[in-house]
Image 1 (tube, rainbow, N blue to C red):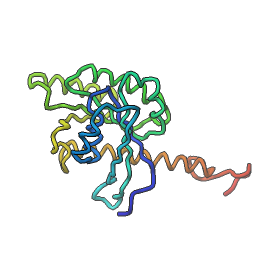
Image 2 (spheres, rainbow, N blue to C red):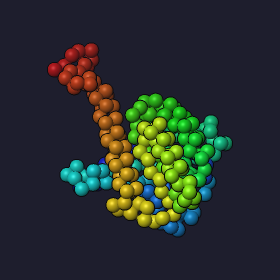
Image 3 (cartoon, rainbow, N blue to C red):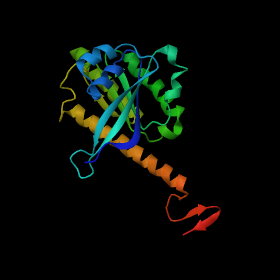
Image 4 (tube, rainbow, N blue to C red):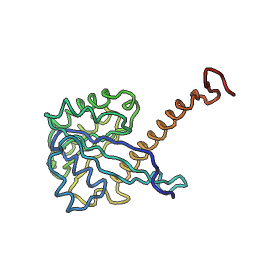
Length: 221
């Protein structure tokens, strides 16, 4: 396996203020407990965490990629200014609080804001819907809450994950949640590679079939 690939992989982490985006980003990037206590406050603008992802782990194609997790503020005061972060992205993590139904309903607005903000990046981009605070959902409401999340993920066309961010085993190797995130990050890397290849074809003058190119107004074989 080689060193980390020098290809920028940008993933947006969005959702209402206080739903646990920063905490989720910190556990995904395996930030120490001492750092979490300092980080998990209100985000102003955007925080960027770096995740080192093993692409296609356990296969001959395994490689390391730096994935940037852009934790964007959900504060209403930043509504008009945060659009600056919604460009040239390769994946989106939508986060909501399972004990706050409104935060799930607001995901529709986040989807429109992010995916329509940069339609080129938003086209066929990998999405994952994450519900936090699973441990705080009342037992008699758990089925209903999970069904609402399932319907929203179908509406978005996203992967669905519900978890308790305070459970250190939630993302342990081999767990269902860990596998779901690994597959999601693999798809994001594939999206990034495909986009880089398209850009390279365009910059070198090759058409999509790669059969002909035009340089200086003349056709070259």
